Image 1 (spheres, rainbow, N blue to C red):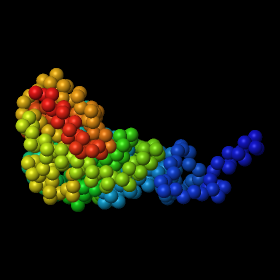
Image 2 (image 1 turned 45 degrees about the vertical axis):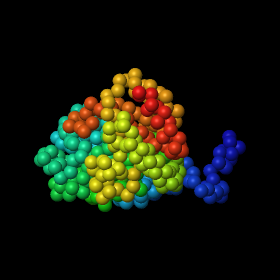
Image 3 (image 1 turned 135 degrees about the vertical axis):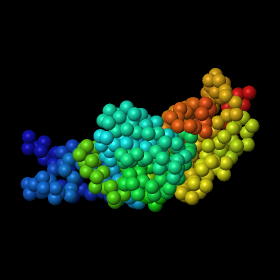
Image 4 (image 1 turned 60 degrees about the horizontal axis):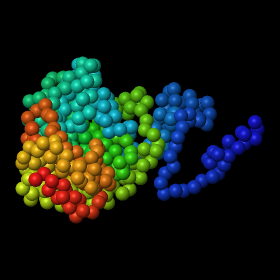
Length: 386
């Protein structure tokens, strides 16, 4: 038994002077974290211990990624979650209680809205969908018990943009927490806290990871609400596996380069689509034709590779299948933000009046393939509609 003990002792690098400096950080796996002594453990009970107490207490790889995102977002505290929807759900729960009312922008992520309808309502938290292009007119939807406003700008299906500063000005006067899902623009192309937002959410699954092999999300909170969120997160003992944090942290290093290519290719393809006789509307905030283009110019520093378009005619499912199934470079799949180009097509259901009611919205996630090849692929597919 002594021999086995000696062997096991040798695999602990910090106890044997084995150190290696690598470009990327090591990943940590573990449940139990050892204390140096009893007096150190006593500090945990008196809330004086600042180290890591357990595997759910955010191991080093997670903390490194959180700090990187906190700096990029410009907030006071960031926490990472197992998915984007988990980030949305936790943010909503952290700032609401029974009897409260929240406002949810009608173009916000669908599973987040379902969580409001099916889960929060069970706990007597009411919610009201509001128009996706809302601005100062949000005041008409606010009730005495309204405590939170959830925005997504632009929305990731129909790409409406809200007037964020107008909303946050009103919300701040009424002590209402404002939450923005900023996944489309990433931390590079929008600065939510400069626009008055209190809580910023990113689906790390998308552009930040960049390779369609990570499920994660982040929530960054300003100083005003930092302690409330930190306490709720710790209470729930949420954590994210080290491998996901490692891959997300690695993705951050190439984010700026990838995003420039996504942006350039998407704009080229969007402008080309605007010239086609079969296309009705191209839903891209960076195009002058977009109804909220002026807000995009004011509040955003760039655009990403996700946009959509609608047809002038209402094609049947068989006709759409002839177009979509013939594509070679665009693949059918949910999510977006990876290196591979993706497509979805559906009629979008809204609780509030929509510009695109009864229209099939074709959403394109422009990847890193050659832009001319992507245009040729779409051109060939669209020819089958005739």
